[in-house]
Length: 431
Image 1 (cartoon, rainbow, N blue to C red):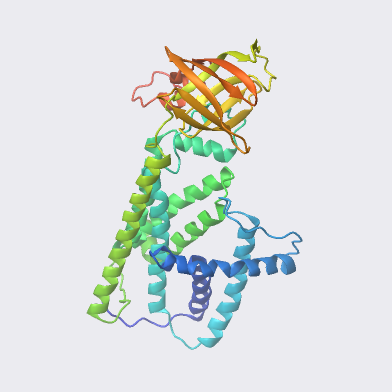
Image 2 (image 1 turned 30 degrees about the horizontal axis):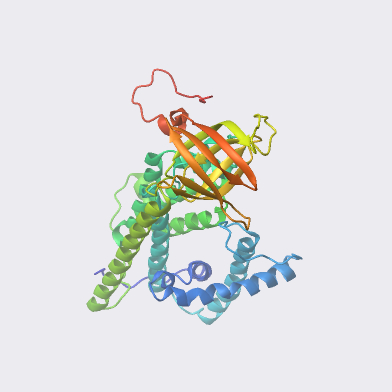
């Protein structure tokens, strides 16, 4: 148990700033930690429902936004709603912080509340880092680029897609990034390692923030939030860190005050922390493993896995020449995932089809995505790696001869690691 000491009174500026910082970050992280506890988290959704009316009011009457602010999950954390939501938090912080200051202006310090606040903030940051870190350990957040993506050009790619391809093409670097986040998260769980965990979290998250800023990845607000939280946690010992790193003087152990007042309460607190940390780590590992096996690197591949270029394309008995502007003739078909297949037309436009392959009957059922129509049935024959498809699509009789594309041409995935390089292998593999 930590030693009990009587903290000195805080300066007026320190008390004043703490109240507003406490309110702001509390509003941000709520309803954590209740939101991640099984059977309780679903009851905390009401907290998020409180904000849309406030966001709409601030957007309409303070910012003059005429159109309704859309609030829906899109995968982006930098929507207009998110930006206005942060403004709402700032306004609420000013209001609640002012009430807090007036009502509690005679308090000498907030040492105990500060300790609890840092504990909850540390666990919030740890939970977030472990969530992102563990899925990277399973090469899940940045999966290897699929065969279809390998035919896209760099110029066609968005900056964000370029980062996803860059990260996903190297399991080693992705796992390293995940291990860094996971280690920072674990260190944040323990009092003795919390400061070094916050410093590591700052380094990791600042790099993430710069990636988001540099490649237009819409998690800028959230990543900056994590950077600021990591700095705030580490700043508790800023004088000791300054002494240690810049003056080369000995740094004595800090004097700390217990968050609880009895031995029994201390053990209960330790047990709760261990249970929470264990639950987060185990549940994240379990979820990441299941995700890897369902849609990550461990998921099943198509029964006809590979890339096939169209050699002959016969429609209604007529051979269609390979004109580059043709929107009817197929150029390429990519069998990668079991349930959907992209077909590239001669003009390089992709059409995506839901796919069901029966290897016993040697049939393929194609259903064009986004259209309410019956599946088109094809039979296939396979010989020396080549495919022959016969069937009907959109009332047209098709016979398609396909030749396999040599996947070893994909240097991005096949280069491997080399200790010795006589010359830099900085090239593009043309066909």
